[in-house]
Length: 394
Ligand SMILES: *Cc1c(COP(=O)(O)O)cnc(C)c1O
Image (cartoon, rainbow, N blue to C red; front, side, top):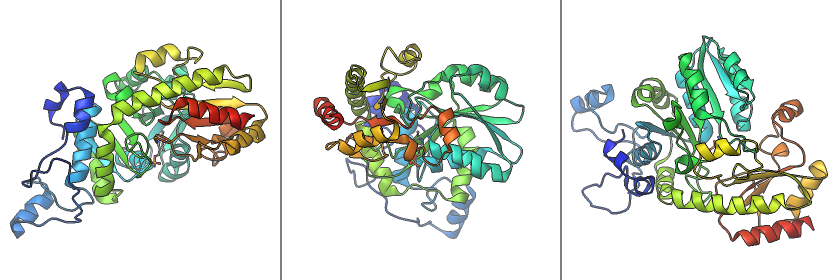
């Protein structure tokens, strides 16, 4: 539950102070509640808490003070009423889907979402009688005509991975609202430091806390943010019953990560813009994808919707898979890993890693070519990153 008092403070302040409830020990830093269960004053107290008549901790699958501190802090930062923390970003999407959907329901999903998100809808939700229509994220007519009376929600990610396409959140939320459908936005790439989808009309925000919220590549986690009533009624019961819970230790790491989120996102964005501009000037680079570049097809929308371009830069090199793999293998400083949102710069080949489980035609439809390389720009000196890439190319 968000303490609305926090809404008068800037995000940098919320990130450091919101959600903390000091215990009688008067600790300054947030404690880790490493406990699976809680004791009750009496049998009657236990019964009252289990039934929900009296609020309080019951069992850490669905109530833990450290996890709650993380939830309340992130809710404040996203301008949301309520946050539910879960075990991973994929658990956040699956929990949202299991909570909201029933057989016969329909989902409209951007084609340019995280690879596992496509598989979740296509391979698993389909088994329970939920159908999904995939659309090009910037084709607004396609969104409009895909919506049906039984469409429960629309799902998108902006900027998208790895091509950094931008979707107009306000415009798509209006379409969803006119049909009585919800808009769910995966805000992983921007985080609330750069973009607040709820303020733009989205109903639910999804996070992979694994990425920028942690910020140093330590823990896997996820979160769902939105209106109190919607989350309490339709999504929280699935967490309690299905059990994709966040561990208190991970919640504590994410709490610490949030404290520096705004500073880090600004620094990631500055490094990424500088690297993208340099890549665009390199003759061995065919095309650069970065929302902060004026050459980005949706640069104007990006400037309106996001406070900065974020940390992800993708580019195409000559020579298809061979060219991309050679460049990746020849770097010395950059880490070859598919993770992103780390202080360490990472380099990856989307076609054979993050998007490798998609079929060739699905990849082609999503615009992910064999020569595409994705860099999640970290916080090292950007000149050192440039030098590593130039040496790798040579
Ligand atoms: C990584 C990622 C996810 C999945 O998160 P996990 O924590 O790895 O489960 C979802 N969406 C986006 C955009 C991601 O980058």
